[in-house]
Image (tube, rainbow, N blue to C red; front, side, top):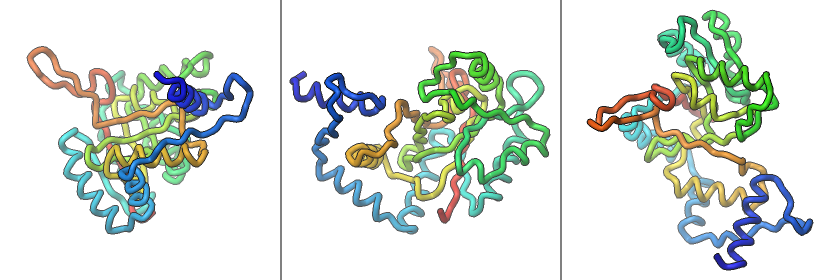
Length: 258
């Protein structure tokens, strides 16, 4: 690759990793060369109104069944919590006879008061240790213990940063306290988000991420997870099985009006 392009690439990687360049000079944000399509997508996402989000919700409702994604819209945090608890009550533990739940620490999930709700169901809730990194580097006993709990958990609850309506794809930024194993290892993955986090497609996602990076925002994480429904595996006879290499169910809960 040309030297200029190589330096742009390396600069972007170092910035995403939070590292300075080898010369010790301040990092400069490369010119991403936005196309008209990307500029249009940025403008569209910034100016979106309630009616536009409702239209995206209709697109998502059509796309979700195609990938076996459960979607529930709720008007309040209390109703979202009730919907989650109803699904947890109905869930059968895949490993052993005791239900357990793992969850991210996240402002939206804190509003749901999961600890108290699950306590009433006599279902233990486990959070990742603060030391867990976005790269899921489980290097000590505390982190190893959480990894084991996540692998045995009936449900993993996360937030979602975005949902792409046209494919039903959830976008999860992995940060400290937000390890990807909470969405990957439990038998059922539940994700929560607000209506204004709906996007149309990957073009809009790329536009937002590029714009954030260009503005020097710290929202570019070391890892990002895309979830398009439950794990799907087919054998040589094309028999489809859900849950062989990830959750067997994925449910998205969307809070309207916020």
